Length: 367
Ligand code: MRU
Image 1: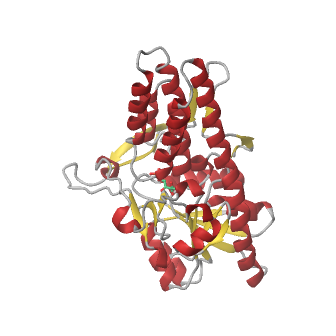
Image 2: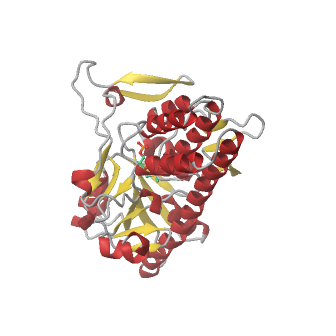
Image 3: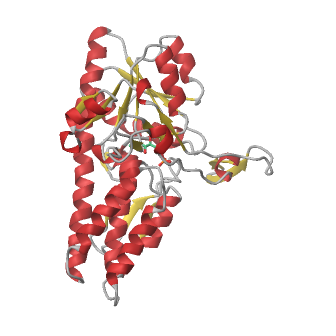
C-alpha cells in the first residue's frame, strides 16, 4: 500500500538480480530496511524470525522460497528430492498459519509437474506471482464486503464516528496490499466515512503498536493505540462499534486462530453485544479440520520475546529486559476463538456466519 503515499509491498522480486526483497518488519516503524533473500534457507529464517509475517504474506514468502529452491536445485542430480526437502523445510518455519503449507504444497506440485531446469524456474516464478496477485485480489474483495458492514453501522448512527477495534497486524504488511482486517477500514476511509480505529498493542512483539499504527498513520486513518487489556473497558463504555481481526487458520466449523489475545477480545465483545468479525481470504481455511481449539497447532516461541522489549533509544533500536532474566516465561503466539463468539467471516466471496453450513454456502466446492 503506501509509505508516505508511495505504493509499496512487503515482498517483491528484484528485476535486476531476480532475488527476493522483503521489508524487515522487525525494524518498523523506526527503520524501513529492505533485506535481500537469495536461498530457500534464508527464506526459512526470514519467516521464522518474523522478518516477514502475517498469514497471507507467510504464504507468499513460502511460494517465493520455492522459486529460490527451483533455482538452487536446477543443476542437481536428484532435484525432485531436494525440492521436496526444501518444501518440507519451508513449511516447518511456522506451524499455525495454514497459508504457508498451502502455498508451498501448491508450488511443489506445480514445479514437479515440469521436466527440469529453466522451465521449472520460470514456471515457479509464474506460480508464485499468481499466488501473490490472488491474495491482493482477495484482500480488495474482502475490503468491499467488509465495507458494507461498516456502512450498515454508519447508517444506524449518522454523524458519529465508527469506532473499530483491531488486534495484531492484519494490514498490507501482513497481506501484500489492503490487508484483511484493515481492508474494510481503508475502504470506509476512502469513502469518506468518519472512522476511528482502536489499535491493540499486541504483546509480546507489539505488531499493533509498531505496524498497524504505522500503516494507519501513513494512510491518514485516525487511530489510537491502547494496551492489550483496554478493549473490554472501552466496550463497556460504548466506545467500540465493532471488532475486526484477521486469522491464521480457520477450521470448517468457523473456529479461528489468530494472535494471542484475540479470544479475550471476542469474549468481551460477546458480553457487550458487539459484532466481532474475522476477515480472511479462503487460503486461510483449513478444510481438513473441524475443531479449531483441539486441532489447530499453536506456535510457542522463544521466551526472550516476552522478557525483552525492543524500542528506540538515542536513534538506535535497543532491547530492554523487563522481568528478571531468570523469570520463567511461556510464549504462546496464538489462540483460538470459538465460532460461537464470531459474528461473521468476511471473505473474498462475501460475508458468512461462522459455521460449516454457511461457510459451504460461499465455498460449495469444499462440501
Ligand atoms: O505472529 P504474526 O505477526 O505472524 O501474527 C500475525 C497475526 O496474528 C495476524 O493477525 C494474522 O496473520 C492475520 S494477517 C492477515
